[in-house]
Image (tube, rainbow, N blue to C red; front, side, top):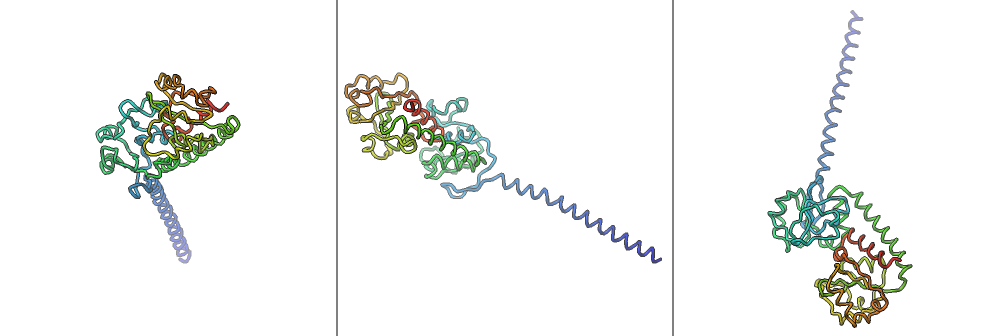
Length: 320
């Protein structure tokens, strides 16, 4: 009898222990998928500040629209669903990557935006140029409004786009690679130019626009590459919002050692300068140091790719 009782107690102990193990195993199986689900949920959204305050955006957007800021998208390896345009005019310096991407008008007509069915829309903070309101676009797709500071600083754009698109590592890499490019070009130009000065002029039709020290990609030339400014550009100071043409007579005061002349092939302004005794008397023209570049588009934009191409242009005409 005692033996049976011992056996009975042992049997109960074994069964109880087995049930504990089973329940424990089932508990582990139940909690594991919940943890994964929570992790997956956290990865589907991005919360960050914008010009509209804190916003929540999808982290897995594939069809992205960032009109006029395609430079930052392409720098991160992302092709937009549509590209900024004014009629047939586009950002030419990006066309190698965007030639097959349809255009969307600069004022973002709501119907056109709808037709492209974006998952994410990234806009500038000033909405005045757009046809719709923030609320209109946000009804079509999650919409992020850049801050004024971000619009003015392409580095901040890349960093923020990297966060939105889950490409933070890529953003840091392309920015670091760019700084290396700047450093190398700076050293090269210090050797080839020394103290010589450089001016940049864009001719469109028969009008001439002299770049101030911070106008578009001239900031790369002067602030990043350390190239010296001629006196006339120093006197112009920082760029105003309106960019007015300068007369050939005023260009007679340009004492630059070198001039980078941005002009499409066959532009009338080139002929005008060649036939102008006033222009021919300037130091750069007299010494044969007027360097023509036939694609102005990267010079009249700001962005990582625009800046890279500007550095390449400068090295091609002044780096040897």
